[in-house]
Image 1 (cartoon, one colour):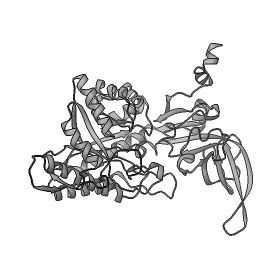
Image 2: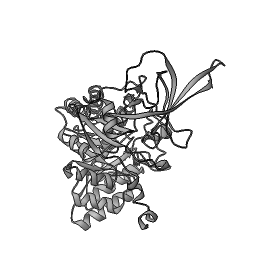
Image 3: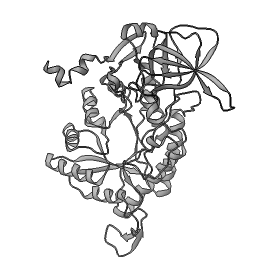
Length: 457
């Protein structure tokens, strides 16, 4: 049962593979982040929780987030259009992206969204030009890379130096770390950020027409369990804010600490509760601000996976099974059962992208007896098409049984594809014993409709 609905009924009504999303679970997690961070930073600062829509976004989900008091973070013009279509108030929307087009920036300005997170000096200049032409001021946050190496997969660590996101705090080689203050005094001040892309962009943002610099932002990566990286990033950002105030007399009002908090994909994962995350970050921020003589700025965070990931389950139907012999570490051989399902890397690409691990259970009937070491694989023409690498399933698992793979609410639908011309699954929400289609199942006619040769005939 999920949300009071039997999975056999869900599969019969909506087909498989099927993404199932618990509305109650999503809402509860969204509420817990809002309440935990609000309480931890009170009374010094207010907190905005931006749901990171890239994890999974639909008009219904955008509505749930707003109803629970959240803002919505988007990462493209398309996600921005979806958030607006879902009724999110423009002032509660942020726009990310390392390579925003002029059209995307213009859409954000026309809609009057609450923040544009500038990722480069080039983008900052284009925001200014477009805002001036539109007769408005763009609310801007600068995305900085604080040089924190998060304990996660290389492809989802985003705050180290050698990657595409943000503006580095590290000065260019040979840059002078001393200079006159903003008032032109002859006395020299030591500034560790002079010559860095971050300092250049911040200085430019303060003088550009059409730009209202609201604050700074950092996101150190995704699926992170250890608190140290988040705390170190917060300390570095606050030190940067203090240097800006010393140089320009400006105390920026906002600080975005990003997201990336890990969830439990398997029993080996140990995620922290929102209350623990909030308490640790609030203590770090308050102490760092006190040390630098700063008021605690308005705080924002961007959880996505931590809200929607555990709320989602994918249902698959079992097809072919076969047993193979594999080498064991002790030199012997053991049997592994390959269990093929009716989906795979087209509906969950995380395994082939970052070796992501999942668990699974036989969900359509109760089975007793022995279990076998199994590998759940998809139906695509790739040997790496693995849904769950290692799991013990009942030896009685049979064709047409349903398998449930939990914690698939984040990034599975967002990264889905039509590889091997498979149609993308439906997304169904469950709550109080009823189901509702959020995104209908794609059809072959949908795909063929984009093929000009088919359309011509």
